[in-house]
Structure formats: structure tokens, C-alpha cells
Image 1 (cartoon, rainbow, N blue to C red):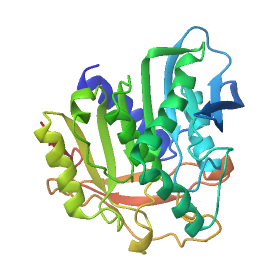
Image 2: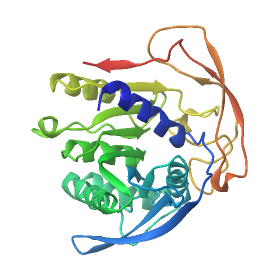
Image 3: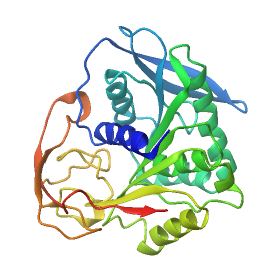
Length: 297
């Protein structure tokens, strides 16, 4: 797949990640049970029952909260666009939490064990590839936060993917030999004000990619249309939808792109429907003309 083609795919996936699409067509949701080394996983599959023939598949990896409604909604939106989407269960048993401390423990157990993290993601990808509606030669993976880290690790493992898109995820450095196995194109959408990823980490990630002779695009975007920098990593959440489940965020402020070339263009963007598709909000976005990107080549 050419980089231009992947970038178009990435743009479509970004619209889904940012909630800028509507679910239409005859989308069928279903729970899919599978195993990873004895652990029972409960994923969420979505597809358009009105389409015939094989189609591209997209793996969706949840935030550290687990496979909740946000991840399911991304899968439904992708299905409405004509993909077969599987929202993976990374914790087992469909476990979710609304508690930050518990979420940290669940995610941390996998982040400290990259081999297990990759194995869990690979198990879900195998389920998606085996679906009779999926063309296994046309697959991609997207992830949010913890899930963004996961899809990068999945790409490093040599998974047969056209590309991966990370939304406000951590930026793990590839292990020795990873870049030689890497097949997927990489698109990273990173919150410029994300307090969880230091500028040095972003620089180290870019350097590792360049040294490995890999190409990709990394966009630093304003974190969130709220005045609070502490919630800046939630760039995919609509205004008024809390980054932390159960906590209300106050909308307002300016969306800005804080990296790349300077420019004066102004674009008005509309966030997608919140959970359940019940509300829409608007915010003002400022950014450089043509988008701000840093390309490793």
C-alpha cells in the first residue's frame, strides 16, 4: 500500500476516531468470544449486513477503561463506512472499570509485559482475519490511549497490517529487531498538550523510526477543546463528554494545532455524536495551512 493510499485510509479512520461520522446502513453488532492462552476474551464485532463480498477489516483497541461504549461506538461507525470492525478485549472477560486506579492496574499489567500485550492484540487480529467477511490482505488497527500504545506494539510485532493509527497513545520505543519486522504504515495523532507523553518521548520515537529507515506521519494536535490542560489527551472525545467516565468536563476554549509550520488558517469543525449519538457540539479550530505534520523519512 502506498503512503498516499494509507494516508487516505488514516484520514477515514481519524474521522471515526474523532466521532465525525454517522452510523447508517444495516449494521449488525455481536459479541465474539475467543481465547488467548487460556484467557477468555469477549470482543465486539460490527459489520454491514447489506454488503456482499469481502471487505477491509479494522481492529479497534480500547482505552485503559476496557472495552466500553466508546470503543464499541468506534466499531459501529467503522461498520457504517463499510468495514468489518472488531473492538478487541485486552483484559479478558470483557472487563471494564470507571476507576482510574483500577484502570492503571489493568493497563499497567500489560504495558509492563509487552510480549503479553502483543499476544492479546494478535489473538484479536486473528479473529478478525478469520471472519468470512474480511479480506485478510486489507486490514488496519486503531487504538486510543492505552490502545494507541497497543496498536504500535502490534505493528512492531510484524503483524500483517496495511497500517495502524494511534490516537493520543503512548509512544513505546521498538525493541531490537522490531523495525525489521514492521510491515504497517504508522500514523500517530498525538495531543500536543498531553501530560502523559513528554516531548523527549516523542523525539525519541521519531528518532527510532528514522534510524530504522521507516516512514510515517506524526501530528501534534491540540488536546481537547476545554480550558483544562490536565485533560488534554482526550482529543477524540466530543465536547461535554468526560475523559474520565463519571466526571463532567466543561466545554470551552480553543482547539489549536501547536506543531509544524506557522499559518493563519482557521477551520470550523464539528465533533461527532456523543455516546449513543445524542448530542453534537462545535468548537473553533486554529491550525497551520495544510495541516502540521512531521514526517520521518
